[in-house]
Image 1: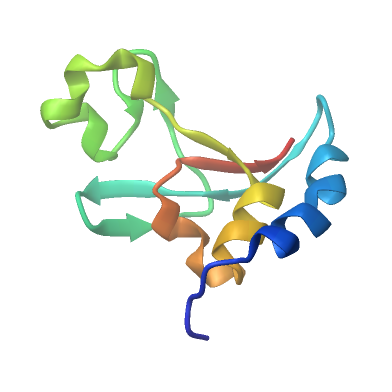
Image 2 (image 1 turned 135 degrees about the vertical axis):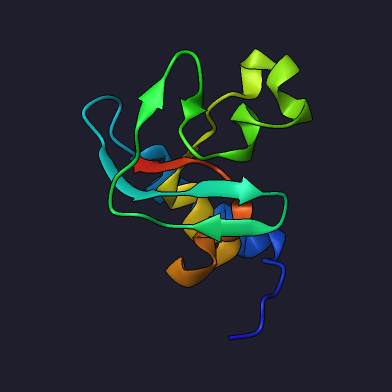
Length: 101
């Protein structure tokens, strides 16, 4: 499937589904580890710590480490589904935890 930008009308038409996301207790739908700048893997589970963030993610080993506010990235799956389209493109966003929340 060729990626395409959604129109403003398409985005607006889907906003209710996004706003209906669970406020707590959401489901983690995908985890992503970025071992290097342009590499993404989607393991079944990840290890997380305060020292390393997502273990194996490039944040823990390169220049981004000086920015603790981007240690772990979390994305709402409904937003990502709307913007990225098919689920096989979700990992490209680079967020570590994709959850319905």
